[in-house]
Image (cartoon, rainbow over all chains, first blue to last red; front, side):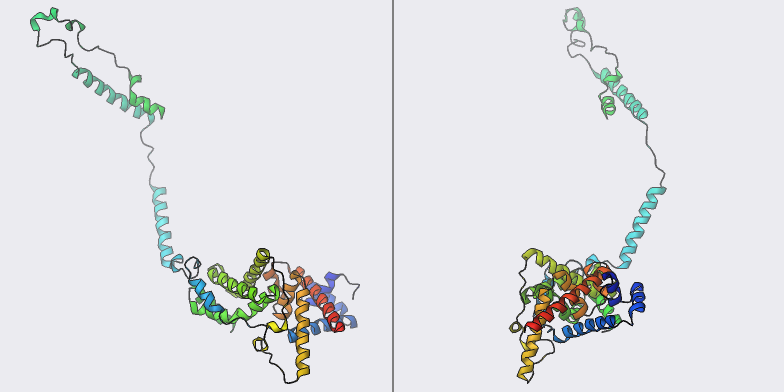
Length: 180
Length: 189
């Protein structure tokens, strides 16, 4: 028996495995094997008979129960809110499904194009610029003050506000949009 | 307690029933404590480790999916706690002296009326304890689980997280080792 490799001996000795059964069939009549098995059984019986099992202390459970009651320790099993009822889970899942379906099914509008935005901003700016230009008057042009002595008014020669041309590239709103 | 009752109890404990936890504790504490004691060889450490193991188990009971494997799972937690303690404290293993466990605390055994028999019993218990102490932890744990706790090889493999063949090999080696130790102690005596 001792000539057998350890792995075969183990399969034979310990159990109901395919290899163990084949080894057992081959060696079951062997006196060595029977002796070996008997020795194993005797050893186990000797330990079970003479091993003195110790009794655990009687005050262990109160200490465990107290530690389970400590808020920091009570993580999973006793924290009921962490385990919602199945109906709550189903309701939450249905809500998520509904929102997802709505998001997916609602036609997505891309909104105005960049060109349209710039065009609108330019048009608004033109309107503002025109109104602003029309409302500007030279307080020093003397109109209504020195009507008869227009040539004596030194400021009158300066005329009205400069008739500057509209330059769309100076539109600050357009610049902001283009920077974006 | 049959398997169905046990699973029902575990289910109740998972739902937060403290009485069910207490019953589970009562059912398993002696076995877990003796396994741990066999490993750490100090009653004080064994009690601490056993407490920690049950607290870990009850706090994480919801993670246990297969209720039929509760015992294996509990042993595994206890084993992990033992090795954590080994790492933390580098426990100097202390052999339990017979005086350490008074006879009335021992499971089932009562002092006999025959003084000679009593002396022999105590000596044999010492031999057993010494043999267990001499076994390397890797062999000792599978030996205790197999021979003293009488768990199946499959369950032991699950507890120690090793292959079945590796467990069988270690149990075989542990038996050979234990046999040699006992022979030596008995011939010395």
